[in-house]
Image 1 (cartoon, rainbow, N blue to C red):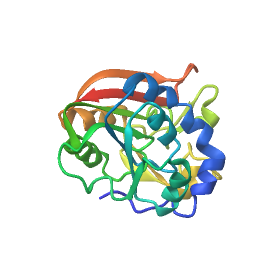
Image 2 (cartoon, rainbow, N blue to C red):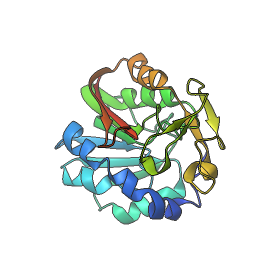
Image 3 (cartoon, one colour):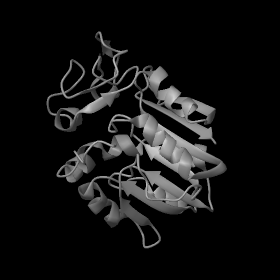
Image 4 (cartoon, rainbow, N blue to C red):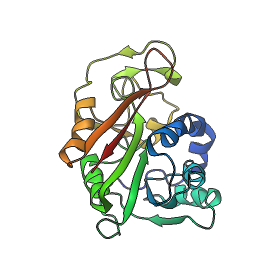
Length: 223
């Protein structure tokens, strides 16, 4: 099952402090997803930061998140064509093959069983369609890495290969998001294997950003 809605009560804080970092991945949707038409699921849509982009690209959008507080802000961003649903991302309330595309942004750190989320995404995709994913780079962002504001050179500590949930670690700022809601750390191998084990075929993988040490990874996969 997906983690409980730890973001309830933090939606406004998230938007105030992290919206810019999240929106820096907007070009991933423009390049790897591209234009509609078609039905697109924004899986774990959060406060809806990417809903306007998906709508602008011509997709008919459904957003799903487990946090009512996050969805409150998403509704403010969504136009009348967007459907927003509160649901567990690992047990989606949709029939098989419902969507022409699935996007999920900054997700694996907040879900207890990311592989189950990917399997659900594949289930609700029609055959031959596309999944686009972008999130934190597990090599440089996590409990083992002090990488403040994704600038400079990360300082690494032991523990990279440990797959676990954490709320405190050398890489966690005491006043940051992870000290408030915790996170799940996956190695890069475990992250990619979640997609491969679900039967997806990766056709694009990027270390996203301009710095020497990227803070994000993104990929496109087809089922």
